[in-house]
Length: 337
Ligand code: TXA
Ligand code: MG
Image (cartoon, rainbow, N blue to C red; front, side, top):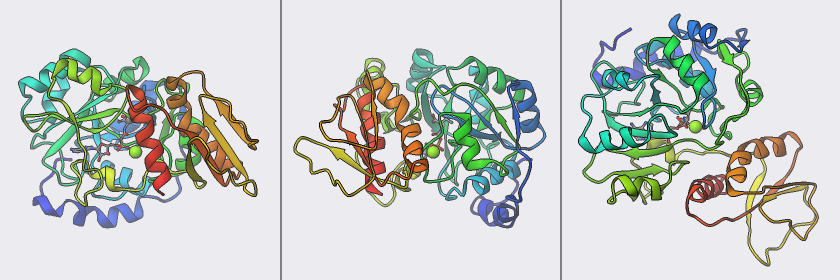
């Protein structure tokens, strides 16, 4: 269905639909990308794996299906969605213009855990972009995801497939824990390769800005465009990336960074994750061999802590470079809550 209303009306129109969209339904589990894609083609919403985290997808041109995503996730409606393409050619359907700079990033990285924010085309309904005139676009680097997207025969908008505020899911079981009975289908696969969400890069200004750190690192982006900067004002009321102001990545347990000399509270049921063995005793401990493994494990560890009723999670800090920047970003935001 194409958008036909005045711009500001997108959410007003969908509000009643969003309230009724969450009646309990049977969530089909499948390993077939073609079967999963059929649900998208019929206006359903489907969780699918990518190389970063599992996403919850709908046809980008189907405003009613997109409304169901916001409802199923309980997502604030001012938080825009990322559009996923199975072929580079499809980017043209989503954006009004691809600058030379954006083209350089596409050629250098796509398919990749990298989302480019570009001016949106008139065909994309405003509910997908939370009324913004820009759209985040990415081509995932995972064969099953690409097979699924190609079978959908349309770009697919997808936020992470968790209930809003919870850690992003890196396994289909975690998707099911949050969304069983709220979505039409889950495309099952192994745990995702990276475990943190994509790098979001704003390409709408002269200078590209990293709005969210991810596996494509600032250092790699600077090799393509040396002026690339980190967007700093994450704390402002109107950040460039609306999602950044919302509660995020949070386990129920309190998250604390472990620095040297930190006082551990013995009375609490506590867990530890990091690269080095701690001296203190914890009820649950995960030691990761590399920063990549730490990034890969963090969201699933948060979820496990919640299942095991952990009260405090102590996280070792890492150097904020490479994937360490993205990992520390997620840890800091989890600790804020
Ligand atoms: O790796 C990922 O990016 C995963 C997988 C499923 O692709 N998706 C994901 O989506 O993490 P989500 O919705 O959980 O996070 C999207 C982030 C939010 O912070 C949102 O505000 C930002 O991207 N974003 C999306 N569209 C934007 C736009 N037009 N302008 C600025 N920020 C945008
Ligand atoms: Mg998310």
